[in-house]
Image (tube, rainbow, N blue to C red; front, side, top):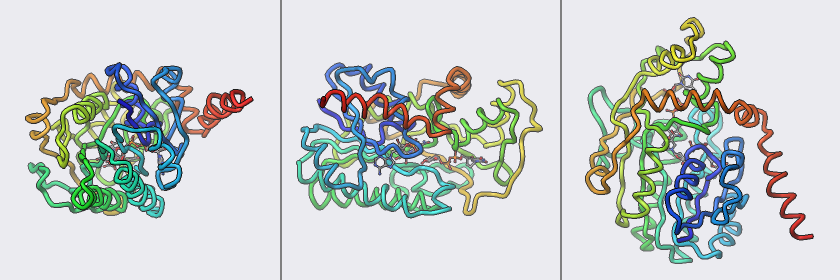
Length: 341
Ligand code: NAD
Ligand code: DAU
C-alpha cells in the first residue's frame, strides 16, 4: 500500500510516519512537506534510510506538484499539512486560508482525478468552538469555529464533506484534541514551557490560565489514525480525545515540578483575543466502531515528553534557529545532485 502523508515533517505527521513504517511492513510512505518553520526533516532522521520511505519537498497549494506526486500511484492520502498555530492566525490569517483551505482543495481535486481510494483529513476539535463546563461535543455538534485558524480548518472540513458528496471521494475526517509528545515545535504550550523553564525564562500564561485542553499523547493519536486507515468506512467523521480536560495552569505547574523549577517563572500576560475557554470531545464513536482507546496516561506521557526534550536539545536548537533546513540541504538536495551526476 502506497500512502502519501502531507505535512509529515511536522509534529504529528512525523510521529505518524514513524508509527506506520514500524507497524505496517506492507506500507510505503511518501512524505510531502513544504518545510515551513514547523516542518523539520530531522524529526525523521531515524527512518530516512528506510527503503519504504521517501521525502518530497512540495506545497499542497501547488496543483502541479500535487499532481506529480499522485502520479506515483497512491492508495491513500493522509492530510496533516496545515498552518497550525492559533496565535499566528490572529496575526495574519492569509497563509491559513491558502494552505488549510486551498491546499485541501488541491488535494481533493487530485483525489477526484486519480480516483483515490482513501482520503483521511486531519481536522481538529477547534472546529466545534468552546465547550461549556461539563459538556463534551459529539460528531453531530454543529461547527462553531472562533479563531481564524479554526475557521480555516472548519472550511476545509466542509470542502472534504462536500467533495465526498459531489464527486464520490472516499473521505474520512478525524477531529482530535490537543496532542503532546516528542517533536512538537516550541511555540505550543507544552514544548514552550519545557524549553523556557529549562533556561529559567518566563512562562507566559494567557489570561487566568484556567482554560482547559484535553491533552492526548501523540502515539495514541497515531494509533487512532492507523486504525482509521485500516477500518474506517468512507464518509465517517471521528472525534479523538483522552477525555480528561485540564487547566493550562495545572499543566505548566506539573512541568515545573518535574523539572524542579519554581512557580515564580510563571508570568500572567494579556489573554489571546477570542480565546476558547474549554475544549472537550466525546470520542465514544471511534472507541466503539474502530476499537480505539488511549493507552498512555497523562502522568506517563508528560514525563516521556519532558525527558525527550531534555535529551534532544540539538533538535530543539535546530528547530528554533532554522538550522533544520541545512539538514534538508545535506541529506536530500546534495544527495540528489550527486545521484544525478
Ligand atoms: P505542525 O505545525 O507541527 O506541522 C505542520 C506541517 O505541515 C509542517 O511540517 C509544515 O512544513 C507542513 N506544511 C505547512 N504548510 C504546507 C503546505 N502548504 N504544503 C505542504 N506542507 C505544508 O502541525 P501538527 O501540530 O503536527 O498538526 C498536524 C495536523 O493536525 C494539522 O492539520 C492540525 O490542524 C491538526 N491537529 C493538530 C493538533 C495538535 O495538537 N498539534 C490537534 C488536533 C489537530
Ligand atoms: O485543540 C487542538 C489544537 O491544539 C490544534 O488544532 C492546534 O493546531 C494546536 O496548536 C492546539 O491549539 P491551542 O491553541 O489549544 O494550543 P497552544 O499550545 O497554542 O495553546 C494551548 C493553551 O495554552 C491555550 O489555551 C493557550 C494557552 N497558552 C499557549 C501558549 C503558547 C498560554 O497560556 N501561553 C502560551 O505561551
